[in-house]
Image (cartoon, rainbow over all chains, first blue to last red; front, side, top):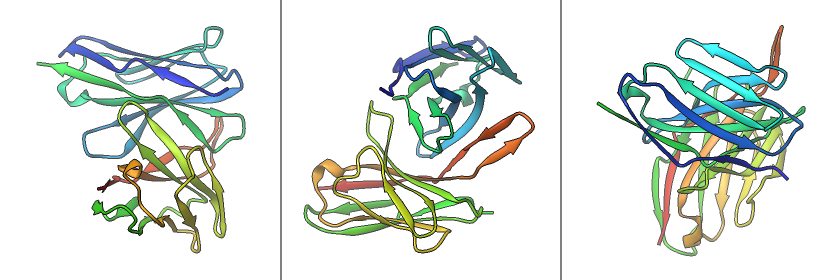
Length: 111
Length: 118
């Protein structure tokens, strides 16, 4: 079956690194995505990773993919208060335009 | 470009009333989606469309209907609202993105409609 799981809450101090974790169950997933939702707004794509990659870096964001364990993580370096939001991981199956979203991780950045 | 817009932003309905939520996109995207977001449950797909004149059921379609008469618009209807339909509704659209190393369906989201059914 298709299921994406995330921890619900993460609190970090400003300037520290944040690591948000996600597990998925469908091994046929081709792309995995990270979306950010700020309060009162829709979701915005942050980054994605193709399933044949182990790592992708994009400025302060690092995505790690462990395909064997079906584990995805998003690391935010030098976390800022503006990074406080809900972060969703999502998987897309092969040739699928439908995404399966996790329940979201609420990141709180303390000054 | 306005991107994806949704109307209304807020609405309160009484049980049994009907309403239509409108989603519009100006990016010429083929694919459009309606999701609902409930606390602790992430986003669940209600209905989607792969092109003008076509619609399909998602994960939680019961109690909702949709229409895609024009490529840029995707309407979500509630014929007889129930308290269980209290939620935040998001519309999204996507295209087939192709680069040298990527073929994917990046979804662009609207700002959401907060619906309360009493």
